[in-house]
Image (tube, rainbow, N blue to C red; front, side, top):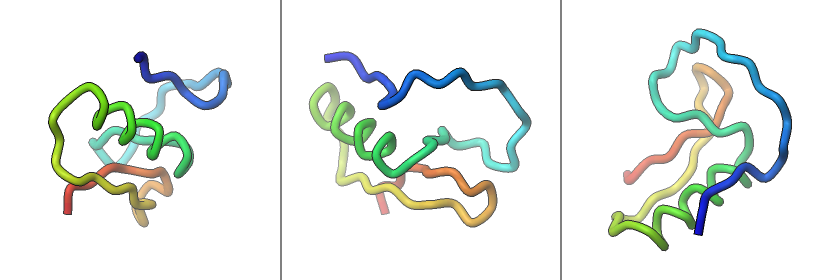
Length: 61
């Protein structure tokens, strides 16, 4: 199973305050969590919306 974005929108690189992997929506973040659970041994993951950059990140906390 290959992870793919839930939409095919063209994106452009930009400098972000966060160095973590960014997801555009909660749906994309949850898709990434599901992909990681199926392909790797990972602890419990959850998604949260960052107050710094406004994007979604994953956390194991």
